[in-house]
Image (cartoon, rainbow, N blue to C red; front, side):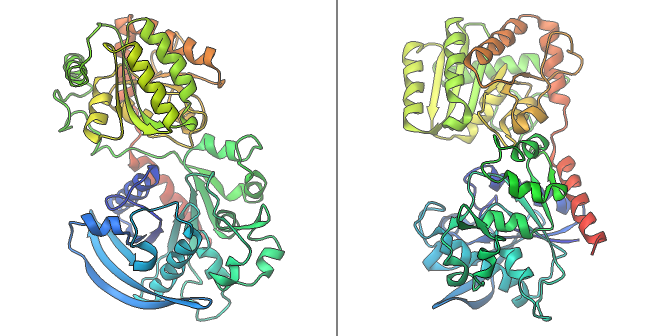
Length: 479
């Protein structure tokens, strides 16, 4: 199959969150499975500043958007078997930021229009176009509303993956004609209308042939008024074409046996002494005393979505029990300040790093006994799966992908449990679960078994990519 992924970000070129990881990892695994995969991205200034692979100019053409005409320059390169096409335009992408500009709607409309034209200009005809989130959401609309018999992409099937339903690409009705050259009738008949605006995400849901999201449980949540963020009724129209596929983890990057960032590599057959060495190294680097009690870690954006109010309730209880706590992340100012207050109260046992440090993240995963992830909502989550890979037992609120990827230990199921979980978004439940994990830690045979279970679980991208391959194949069979 020829598969083209259209996204606003993808590793190794640009990443602001999980989207960049997912697009790259899925594309890479699909190439390993024998598929021909292309990834189409904007050529942001930040990519130009750091690109270190050979790249060539492939094409240039003009894109018309109502009264304005902008040039698109297409560059091409290969990385790990993936064919990358980078769409350049200095006016839209020659900036120091990726998102959050006043004209994001126009910028990504240009990107979408240029991507569509690029396929024909360079004679790339995929079987599947897989779009991600709202930014390229109008692409299937542009293709399917084009009734010209010479429509180059008329036989292509579209798959949409919803990574973050909170961002819905909402813009005024005028963008239909002004940006995309589409008639107002699409707004009037409701196909692209949402909250009395044009929504590129809703448009993608209506026009794509299959819709996926990043975990089975998140799929169910999106169909409810509580979790749907207003999209639940739209998604119910496409319920039989809507699938939840759990994301994976890049097992080459996150491999405790070959991790260059940690002082004592290990695997499932020999990990106890090495975990202790990694613990010692982490605590020394964060200038903390080793209390000999469990080490809890968190690597996270420090925002309300990540359940930080529950985290602080757990952290104070655990710190009072003389546990070590390692915090890595950045986000909302008041959350960062609460982290500073926690460290100020427990300076010898609580360490924090405000910002992001990839090496430190690996060290935390390798050193910790438990990994805290009490999210308010979490479409998939990757941290808990990385933690399991390193034998750090996740403590999660069972929402979205956290519910799908962690089996709660209830005192009787040590043969298969690989973490701890609670359901209610409640400080009492969060603290109770953290204390139960703390109490369980002292039972060495159970602790060892739970760690082995966690390290055995398969969260590789091969599993996820195979599921996506089945989705693509189903569409092609129904052509």
